[in-house]
Image 1: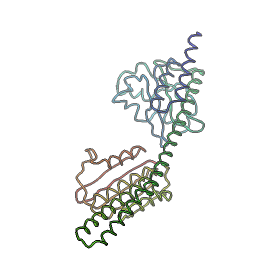
Image 2 (image 1 turned 60 degrees about the vertical axis):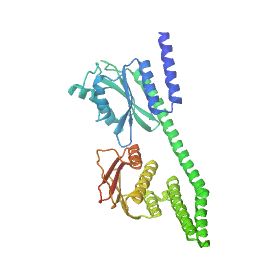
Image 3 (image 1 turned 180 degrees about the vertical axis):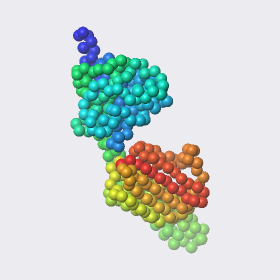
Image 4 (image 1 turned 90 degrees about the vertical axis):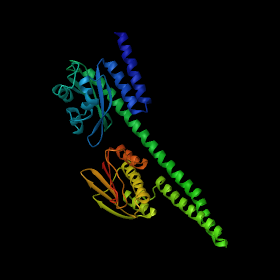
Amino acid sequence: MMGKRHSELLILKEIAELLNTGTNMDEMLSGVLKKLLQVTELDTGWIFLMDGDGSFQLAARENLPPALCYQNLEPMCKGECWCTDRYNNGRLEKATNIIECKRIEEAIEYNWGETNGLTHHATVPLRAGEEKFGILNVGSPKKTFFHEDELALLESIAFQIGTALKRIKLIQKEKELALTAERNRLARDLHDSVNQILFSLSLTARGGREMTENEEVKETFAFLQDLAQEALNEMRALIWQLRPQGLENGVVSALCSYGQMLGLNLQTEVKGLLTLPGRVEETVWRIGQEALANCKKHSQQSDAMIQFMIESNFLNMLIKDSGCGFIYDQNQELPSLGLKSMKERTESINGDFTLISHPGLGTSIKVRIPI
């Protein structure tokens, strides 16, 4: 008995150490779940991380029965169930005793495979203070009841997991702030050094052209002046991308200024109150930059339109030009790194990205983002 108790304490110590030192969220949750099942002598567990809009993702799993692994874990990645509904409704406040699992019931109903005798599970919210992050579910074949001491242990570990998740989120936020500071520093350095050199080169080339009478030399200086001016424009655009001046006045104002700097005749339309979370605003800004730069480089037109519309807790952004367009099949891979980058940025904040383009009919980029 003493040996078993000692073993449990060692595992709990390992869980605490992993939660205190882990920085990779997926690896940490997977490792903690495995050790938790060891100390509780349970067979199966999984962790859902929940978003503010009610959606969830399967962040960790251990020893799921084949029925729940059907079609690449489809039963665990889609659909609603009692525990997610109760969490979203704010009624899941502490470790809750056995719940008949709707996901398992559906797996049996649709004959998705063996459940290995698993019918019920306990559910525990992952939280730190008032902030909630997700759900811990654990169970074993034919186990239909959890004692109070078992629930207390699950709740204790769930609190530790919640605290660790908050710590990791704070670390990620600090990294984002540090990255922003580094971008600002680099933008200042580029403005103070390379930008000034290019400006001086342009002036020198113009002076040289005016001082010589030789036509060939004049053409050479004119060519150098054009190159310097082009490089200067590119540098200014790069500085804008690194340090978005005007973003403090909102993303719409910043994109209008950026479009003006590119030489675009930009028409804007805003419907609904536009107050965005910091990360969403930064991402929308980067997507808009890339889209407007593409309008300038590829559309062969100077006219473009950008529309923002808020509806049902979603931001819809449309950037459109009436330029040359190109052949694009939505079933094919996106044809450029810039377009892929826009899609990846959109999906990083759980949004949807759509590209529509036809030769002679221009190009439209639509982004729909939950806010």
